Image (cartoon, rainbow, N blue to C red; front, top):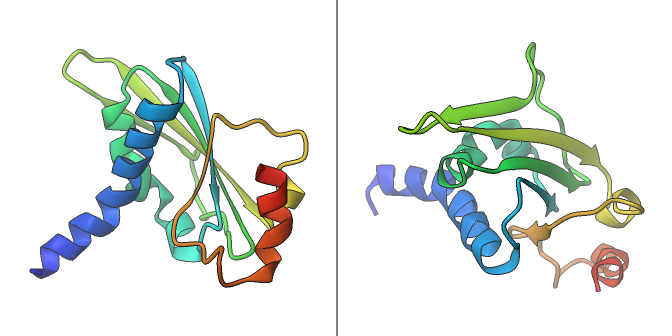
Length: 137
């Protein structure tokens, strides 16, 4: 693959996967809460860029994305962690990011999500995931 193909895949695959999952699994609503389980440090530091296309694909929806995992770190920002995008009809889509360092089963108590997803989390490799899996099912 040409180098630009790998860059596009890196930045679009997560947004497009979430978009298809939202379309298939979440009833239409004005606010969608998504928990990204097992989020890695690089994924967190680039969250605004990684998930920006999701806002373009769902311009009528406010998105609240929480990245959770033992390697999760909040990026240092001087401004708010909200991202906006405008489409041709001037509808505003907003994405708010939150970050939690620790296992999902510690975070999830009392929290509600419309969609919980794990990208390349290694669920099958690490026994530490068992309490999280039990929490999700």
